[in-house]
Amino acid sequence: MNTRKDAPWDGAGKRIHMQEVGTRDGLQAEQAFVPTEEKIALVNALSEAGMAKIEVTAFVSPSAIPALRDAEAVLRQIERAPGVVYSALVPNLRGAERAIDALADEMNLVMSASETHNLANLRMTRGQSFAALSEVNALARTAKLSVNVSLSCAFGCPMEGDVPVATVLDWCARFVDDMGAGGVTLCDTTGMAFPGQVAALTTAFRARWPHTELTLHFHNTRGMGLANVLAGIGAGADRFDASLGGIGGCPYAPGATGNVCSEEIVHALELMGYDTGVDLARLIDASKRLPALVGHDTPSQIVKAGQRLDLHPLPADFVAIRERAMARAAH
Ligand code: COA
Ligand code: ZN
Image (cartoon, rainbow, N blue to C red; front, side, top):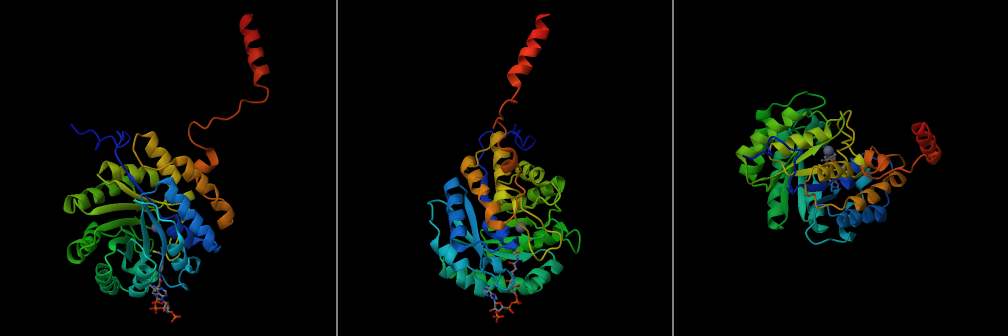
């Protein structure tokens, strides 16, 4: 009997692919402009930590996302570790040309399952986005880049509410069956997903497209991030986006806050016996650099609390306490 489906907390050595989005989803939401050389150093540290894929940056309009206006420079100057996929977010043809020019391995095309959020974020209807992304896809094929599609608001829209499962799967079908995308990311843009919903959508996707690379992308806006990751694993998902320090959020989605935190997810999954391929100590070291770069504390609980067995010193008067207790016991 396969008990894994019923017991996602029993990893049994199963490989989970961790995909870092902190330098894209994370930094896009920050007021501070992180200097180009610091972004490059962060990506290099994430490569060394063993992330399977890194969404390095976004080739979007610099007036829409000023924090990522140095996308070319970052992608061109990072050190590329063998086996790591370096991806970049692309909303239109202009972005695709820039991504090809800067030698991205993969284009992450983006549109929203919600018409309202698509208009707010990308200034196009979903139909217009799909037409634009079809052209981007054709260009990517010519340039031999892989294509992943990130579908925002797949678990709900902060302005429309629930997006019907049928609508989400219809857009997936257009991308996978009609366009031939190699991967789809179901994005919970504003932390509306909950475990039962995640299990249902993951199961439905997997049943229809067993061979398509599926990524789940959660934000921890309502504290359900890790629960959603486990629900996804229980339903057959093995790839997750996460951001260093738990920073992030879409500036065009009201109420958006940080992604699930990379070091928290890796810490939890490794304790459960999964193989993330990530060197947690290196990941934590990289995360500790963030507050100085973004100008504030990050949500990371692991940076604050340490790993589970990072022990604390004894109280200063511990010897006296013990002696008193033993003296009492002797009476
Ligand atoms: N890269 C660089 N510049 C771009 C660009 C790209 N991919 N796409 C458009 N531009 C520039 C245009 O050249 C134009 O510049 P100008 O004002 O100097 O002439 C300007 O941006 C507006 O272009 P237009 O085609 O009219 O786009 P728009 O204003 O309708 O905006 C998007 C559409 C998609 C380009 C823009 O909304 C965008 O980049 N959004 C990304 C939002 C995002 O990343 N959200 C978070 C991630 S989900
Ligand atoms: Zn996101």
